[in-house]
Length: 305
Image 1 (cartoon, rainbow, N blue to C red):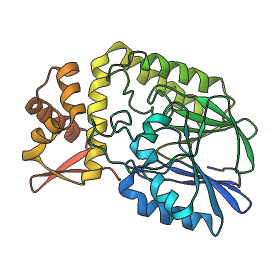
Image 2 (image 1 turned 90 degrees about the vertical axis):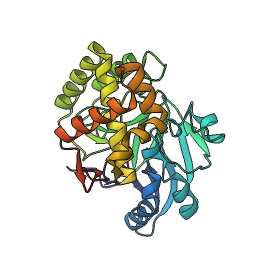
Image 3 (image 1 turned 180 degrees about the horizontal axis):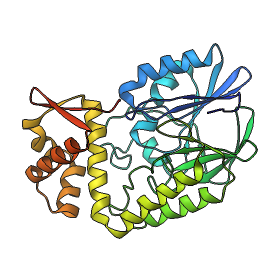
Image 4 (image 1 turned 30 degrees about the vertical axis):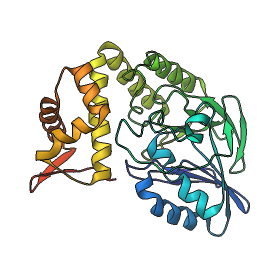
């Protein structure tokens, strides 16, 4: 996939978001910083890609753990300014782990200091290109995407992947309207002139219309059956957490699910399952999909971190 010369993508696995480096002479901007468990690796990868340039600014598309987890480490290493989406300033300033979806989902993060916010309608210069900031609520209600009309390029975060989009948490956590917001975001992206998408996870891709069609079909399935959304969320979050844990004894799975409020609450409220039933269902579903394997009584993820 050909990208403008000032745009470099450090493609990561599913535990860490991609890092997008935008070069302006001797300076650079980075979009998203990966998961805290990969922070040391992120610093090394970014330092290598900078090749002596200065990292002046780090911008986050949204506040989930796999996109902000390297912020603190990069801030220490490069003394870069950090810009976050408008709307989450208080959550970051007070390090509200509930609002940042860390506490209830048993995910990790490291506190950092933000210097500025970016908001819908803002204009940015990055990588020698002019970008427009667009609100992209749904997966995260304060999320942003960055669009460069001249290069017909979109940095989409988790608002659009080649095969879908990120989990729509709000609809499950007491914020009805997140599915409608997801549809509005897809509609907004569909109206933009885009030839290439740099997603938050996965390789950059150019078949934008088919990707949007797949995203709409996925959304329609969730709209028709909210329990399907709940099942998707539990499976996706569990695999993410298992990537972080690396393995978990099968015998301890039910106890683990009971300790994590997200799993216990969504399983009971949306699927009518207690933790034992949820554990059995997860093992069967993820095993059938080839997403986990059992080795010496321990569950292990099969997808790359």
